[in-house]
Image (cartoon, rainbow, N blue to C red; front, side, top):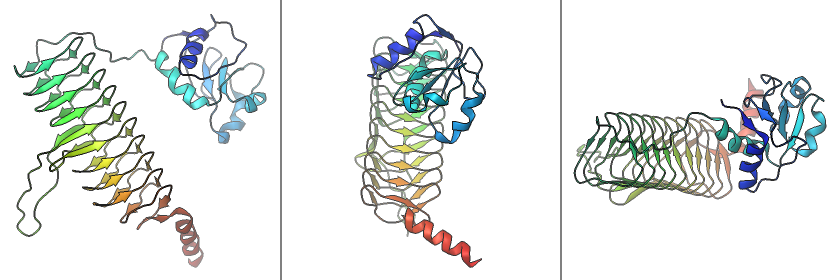
Length: 328
C-alpha cells in the first residue's frame, strides 16, 4: 500500500458528505490501514464492532477511525479520527491506499479478436486473448481483462471493470459495474419439459444495474423471453447461481453459494446469507433478511427475517432450536 496524508483522508470523506474531526495536521502520513491488533505506530486502524472493544487498550496504531462515544477507550498513543460510521469511512479510504487499480489505459492488445460488427468507444482497455463477438458495444472508460469472451448481443456501459476469464453474452451491463474473474452472464439457463426432456430455448437477456458488483464464478442465466435482472448498487458474492427470469431489486447483498431458482422476484434491500436456497416462482419482499443455509419455499413478506428449512420467522426458528436441544 502507498502512504497517504490526512488531507487525502479528509478530502475523500468530505467529498462523500462524511464529517471528520481530528487533531492531525493535513500533512500527517499513514503507511497503511490495519486491524486493531496488527497495526503499528505508522498505521491507521478502525473500530466498528463493540466485540473488539477490549482490544483497543492494546492498539499500537497512530490513529483510529472511531465514533465519538468510544474515543475514550483509546490509549494515549492512538489519536482518534472521529466519524459517525467508521466502517463506511474505511470502505472509502481503503480505495486511496490501494495501488491495484483497473482504470482503463486506452490500450487494446493486438492479441484480441474483435468482430467488425462491434462498436468500441473512447479510452477502452482490452487485454490479451479476449474476444468480442458480433453486436457488442463497449462504452467509454471500460477495462476488460485477459481471456474474456464478450458477446454476442452485449452492451457494456461507461466505467465498467471486467476481470480475466469472464464470459458475457446477451446482456446489458450498466455504468460503474465490476464483473469479477470467472463470472458467466447471459448463458442459457436450466429449462426443459419434464416429461420429454425437450430443451426450452432461452431467448431473453440479462440486465445488471449500475454500481453493482458480480463475484467470481457467479452465474446469471438469461431469461426465456424478457430479462433476468439484478438491481442497482447490489453486491453479489462469489459462486452464486441466479437462474433465468429472476428479478433482484436494488441494494441487494447476496453471499457466496446462494442459489436462486427461476422466475423468483426479490425486492429491494434484501440480504441473503451464504448457502441459502430459494425455490422458483416466489416473491421475496423488500428489506428481507434470509439467514445462511436457509431453504426458502414460500413467499416472504416485507421486512421479514427468516431462517431454517423450511425457512420461517427467525424468532420462531430459534424457539424450535432451543426446544429441540432440550429434548436431547
